[in-house]
Amino acid sequence: MDRRNVHEQWERDRIAFHDLVAAATTADLHRRSEGTRWTNQQLLFHLVFGYQIVRALLVLVRVFGRLPDPVSRGFAAVLNAATGPFNVINYLGSCGGGLIGPHRAARWLDHIVASLHRSLDRADEVDLARGMHYPTRWDPFFQPYMTLADLYRYPAQHFAFHQRQLTLRR
Image 1 (cartoon, rainbow, N blue to C red):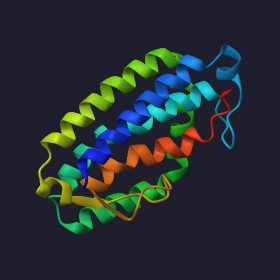
Image 2 (image 1 turned 90 degrees about the vertical axis):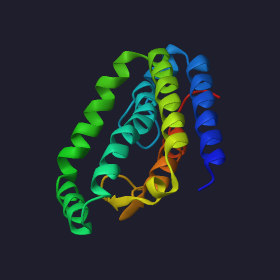
Image 3 (image 1 turned 90 degrees about the horizontal axis):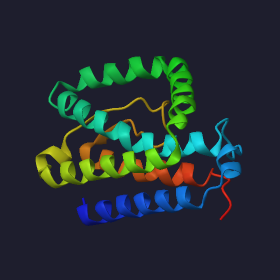
């Protein structure tokens, strides 16, 4: 895993988010995004949440990665079965989360990215190779099995995908 590339991509995303927020007008924020039911403001929150969720997933990988393979495979199957409720919670969470406002979301992203930088710097090669099964119906970037190294690359993929759905004036 090229840690430097991951660190640099996180910083590019963080700066891009700040630029998006700084340029967005009130009308931009309330406009519907492309291909989602969210407004741009809600989708901006969802971009940040994609980074935030990695912090929780890191804990899961560190736990499930030490357990027998069928345990994480079963856990992923249960989560896949709960995709419907997950989608509702995911949607409503970003609707509500968008209420914190884009400037607070930008500060939150700064905190999250700083935390992820520290976490990646502390991870050794054994940690980075540890993995678990994922609910592939929850997110198009979840693979059936992902290592910690894969997980560190995930938030930038999620960010890039959803950033293209924003309808903010450029």
